[in-house]
Length: 476
Image 1 (cartoon, rainbow, N blue to C red):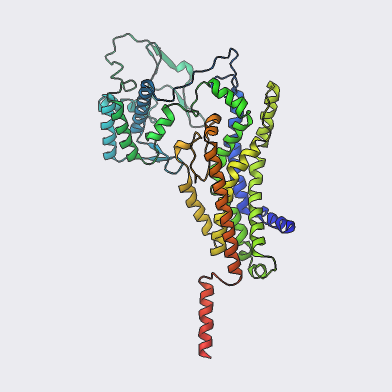
Image 2: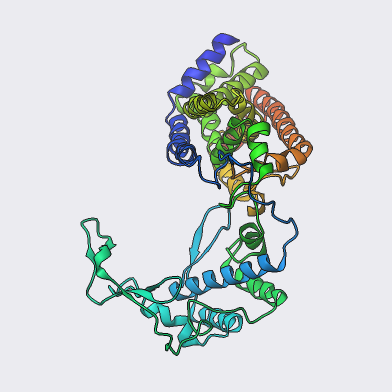
């Protein structure tokens, strides 16, 4: 059994598709996860960092879980400003399947957006589009004025600034000229395109945002889900940490747990698709090399062969996932030792096996069944479809919101340990359910493979061969 397992692992290690998986994981680790660890360690004295410890014991106040008038007003101002910028550039972003896309509106749609902006701000069309001719026009070297607190502005005269060797527009500090405010400007804050007051109620604001989101597409920045995520307070925002968050990070997560959870979140979208490459390539290797006739008649049972291949594919996939965070684990353990904090040395292993392994098991099991039945690359296309529809909605990015059949678990923040623990039963049930379904599909794959070896479940070519045999018999 172990000899067969070793042989299958060697086959996988020689597969180009396996190294596509490894390179994708490396890219996420080196360009997304590792930099976030280094960045957080550089800002340990920043009150917004999870590492921050207040010497006087005074942390930020806990935010009210129920949105208040100030939070609603901040939402209306922030969302309206963003809509204004999007309107001027005619570029609107949304997340249809968990990744960002940009949409350019038609002239008719832009006219509708303009009417909404005029209703929201009370500004005229000229005032709303005014900054486009100055600060917003990237083709004009006059990038406009930079207002400062207390009145006045730093003004860049026409012709100043220049293009550097990298093609970037740069301005030297001595090219700015400060112009104080004389108080005689006819333009009041409410008339300025950069300053305004909302002219509608909060209920009307939500109606307008709903219509704007419908025009842009699924999960735009103006969807109610995204607006709540950005403006009603959550652990994903850059805000000074509270005493509760400080305690959860050092006592609950024991430092490394927070980063292990964030690591799993970083690679979650990759393991929702790429593991299919590994198992499909392994299952089709014999067919590509025309060795299927040697494989099928062997005395080894179908159950042993399929389960061994499945186990080898899962182990080889999990191997780089477990190895990649070792560097950050060492760095974090060293830091914790320097400040006298007891870190969890097994955090990455525990989170990876609990959060990532069930997803890998399921994607590989689905691919195993389809490939055993059809003997082609259809399973990879199916995995791509699963990736599109299996992405959790954006309201699950900050963790703690789990569904029974969520294929991956999201937690895109170093905070939120308490929220996760409040919903730990559903999280555990989800991971167990996904794993049980995966193992049931492996059993189905064994059945399908066994039937195929005995000549059953034939398609196309086999059926045609049977037809020719019958025809020859009739002629004789």
